[in-house]
Each structure stands twice: as C-alpha cells, then as structure tokens.
Length: 125
Image (cartoon, rainbow, N blue to C red; front, side):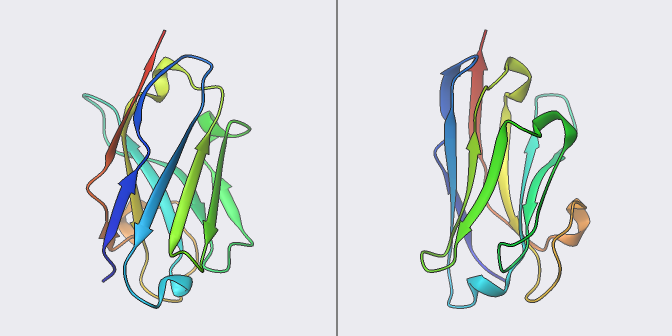
C-alpha cells in the first residue's frame, strides 16, 4: 500500500478557492489511479473526483462538475484538487485515496485500498 497525506484545507468564504494536495510515498505512484472523497458532518463519505494513473482520464461527481479539477504530477508523487466557486455545502473532510497498482480509475469508494487521514475544508456563507 501507498502512504498518503493531504494538505491545503482550511477556512474560506463562499465563492473562494482552495487547492488540496495529496503527497504519496513510494516510487510507484504513477501506477496508482487516485481519487478524492469527502465526508460532511452527519453524512456518509462520498465520491468527489478520480483520475487515471496516466492522468489522461478524469471523472467528477455531479455537485462539483465545472468547479473542481483533479490533476496529478507523477514526478512529484502528488495529486491535486483545485476547488473553485466553493459553496457552504462543500464543507467536509476531504480524503485522498489510491487504488492498487495498474487498476483503472473508479468512482467507488470500495475500490480504493489506501487512504490519507483527511483534511478539513470549511466554507462560510
């Protein structure tokens, strides 16, 4: 499994932007499809975005389409989530996750085998 650590969370006003980063350990990062998930208070964890191991394919949950962008830099072992036009309903703990090596990208939480500890994003109205 790969070790993941998220950063970049914080408090932002509605309409603002944040960029989350997820740093991965190991030399095989480029073989992992990655995903971002989030969990709001009192709710189940939900899919946000995913990216293929080469970075050529992405997918997004409907609530974030057009506002969030997932990307990766395999040379830096890092995946990013650029979040624009933030809304109070985006408030949640955001988690980075990795699939097993060479697996395709996925929107299913159960397909991911490595998880970071999460970073809090709070959007004030």
